[in-house]
Length: 423
Image (cartoon, rainbow, N blue to C red):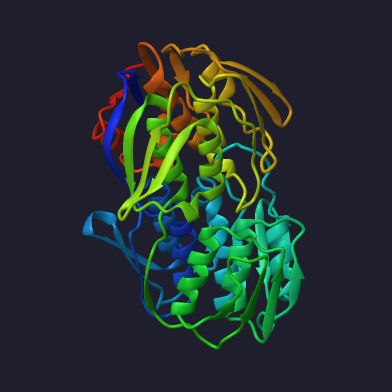
């Protein structure tokens, strides 16, 4: 098993290219199940989660070919489709549940295992089930599998979600694209990944309006055709690398970044004393003057502060001047990185969904353990600013969501390397 060694060595300088969004690509790939014609995705990230989705789609009968060193995914689903998404693949990744809507729309039935992924909260499937049931699907849970069928096909309907779930919005969009009649989804998620999926489906012939707002209207069509679509920039990778010069000092330009993708995050950086400037090629980030200032953070659905940047923001605030309070309102059990940061000298108190961070002058390197995807990179960021050496173990989490992290950070002057754990 690999581990990553980080040595704090001062300010960073240079450029970091930001990859296509993992969470967007994982929703776009299942869209190939909706059509017999090819779907080509450009600007795809090269991640283990993408390989897992490729494996899942192949098990269902789709073809996925990685071109241009994995940056282009050529997908097709023109043959016989297997309606069963097996546990052995689905358990590896939460986004595997995104095949449920497309399979129902294309075949009228599906059997999908309950999904896995990071242990950061319950993230129940009932919101997905309610959304698809509104379209006429009958879904029941038996022996760990969701058995779904839509006798006579899916039908358009009006449905309001009790929570603005990104995954459930994506499942509903894909299913409703081939449903009979008009569907209206209220309290829909507004994330850029939703907008990206809607734009891709529209390129395939879907009739969708309102993406990016809380109400999306879909007029079902008889069939979808092929298309080529670029995956949107990964706003979570963007925010993560924006924090590197914020923590270490220096100036880094994140290529492909746009403030519109991370506006609420940028507002908190500004309050903390970090300058973010939009350039022709991306976002240039640097500290304004002196020590970082404490700020309070509340995670919320988009356009609020992203839960997937909470752990990284906590790493920044560990050395801020003053006391910060972070409130996690999206997932329970998402402060597992706090004890690991405490091993590096951070002063953090966790009470339920609140974490109080008392800033210290300096963190110190220590052996730490990654507990989930975003926690793993927060420990790397902390290590960049710490005295001495930080050794991060269980970094297989990292590879699910960050493409060549050591290479990108070394390019701006970080001392970071990946080694094999001999234990």
